Amino acid sequence: MSAERDLDTLLRTMTPELQDGVFVFCSIAAEDGCPATLTPLLLFREREGITLVVRREEAERAGLPYQFASRLITLSVQSALDAVGFLAAVTTELAAAGISVNAVSAFHHDHLFVPEHRAAEALQLLRDLSAPSVVD
Image 1: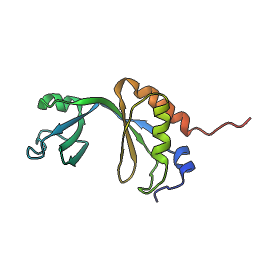
Image 2: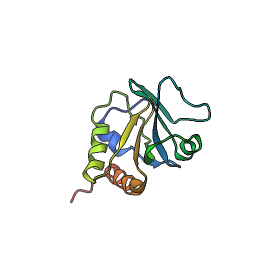
Image 3: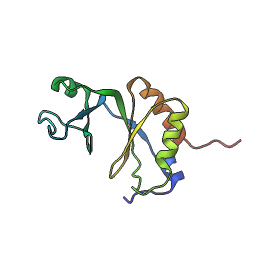
């Protein structure tokens, strides 16, 4: 399957899926490295340290402080890495409802971390955004 670039097609076919679990963001010193007991969904190196996104229970077991308890929504359409405007349209919709989002673009799909307590609302907004418009 080739990756999609057309914004209208991306929005119409994004099929948002809520993933199981609660994820949190942790920061560790670069020299400490990732603890072997963790299985991070995401690891990103910055000048200030390493950001890990892990399941909340993993962070708690490891004794890591964390922020932003969130649910993960995957946009199942295979978006091209150079597609223009897709995440802007999606995050604008969530922002209009006052829902914060941390977006991650991976090779095959885009992923949205939204506050745990607003996940159902975010999922519905995204489903509504992808629904065909009804013209009178």
